[in-house]
Image (tube, rainbow, N blue to C red; front, side, top):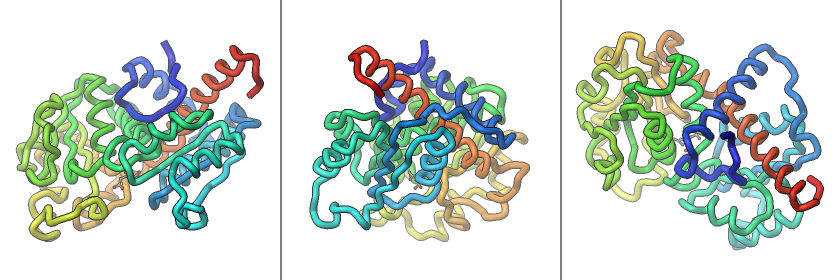
Amino acid sequence: MTFRARHLLGIEPLHPEEIRSILDLADTYADLNRRGAQAGKVLDGLTQINMFFEASTRTQASFELAGKRLGANVMNMGVQASSIKKGETLIDTALTLNAMRPDLLVVRHPHSGAANLLAEKVTCAVLNAGDGRHEHPTQALLDALTIRREKGRLHRLTVAICGDIAHSRVARSNILLLGKMENRIRLIAPPTLIPAGAADWGVEVHDDMAEGLKDADVVMMLRLQKERMDGAFIPSQREYYHRFGLDAEKLKAAKADAIVMHPGPMNRGVEIDGTLADDINRSVIQEQVEMGVAVRMAAMELLARNLRAAAGQEGTHV
Ligand code: NCD
């Protein structure tokens, strides 16, 4: 079985075999990129539009680079410059762009469900680059690839996810992916930052770092998503760092070879100590960014293959 879907909207609908297919292809791209070798132009003749309704540095750059390495024509649509500011709805914008006949539409939007809604309205393949608190599938896939390369496997690992779980699409997609691959997942956060219903997700929930990090193989830190908070969720940043900020001392509770991850952007001194984040013996944060390009190359190649196969069946040309 390989990856058969038309869109990449989330981790939820994916079968473990589909996840493995994406990671295996991404692995070969990661090696190719590291050697500085040329990738085959498998997206030659295809148009990719990046539509970002929320600020993004690494995700947008990574999708752009991935598309260009594979030969796509890439267009970035900045929200500042778009008609959204003039009151056009998401659907109208999407239909306008769809009329320009893109093949791949990469979308980031502050509302949960925005990518799924778009996928119903357009004829091209949609890739979700993060929708509200819902999903961020390529982030979970690049995290999975980083873990698999570092640990040699992606099952039966203890993974601690710490911080603002309640507002995090990264946490949600990672919990879904790591759960499908049969890992043990621990969430560590103050009770105000644990989403309601988390106890039913098949995860352990902790509000003490020493307990939650005990014997962990992987420690994934999350940013405090202040832009999604509409009240006071923590007493103060200082207090938060004291209890939940990761530093070398707290990391001692985890396994001696535990890796430290963060999706970025980091708040140094809020959820993670800056020195630890830069410690190349423990932190794989730069490798995560590197794997991001490889995973997005793989995801877009697989979707393009499916587009071509569907067009072939309908007798049209892509
Ligand atoms: C994350 C996001 O946007 O969801 N960042 C990212 O994609 N690298 C996490 C965050 O914003 O904290």
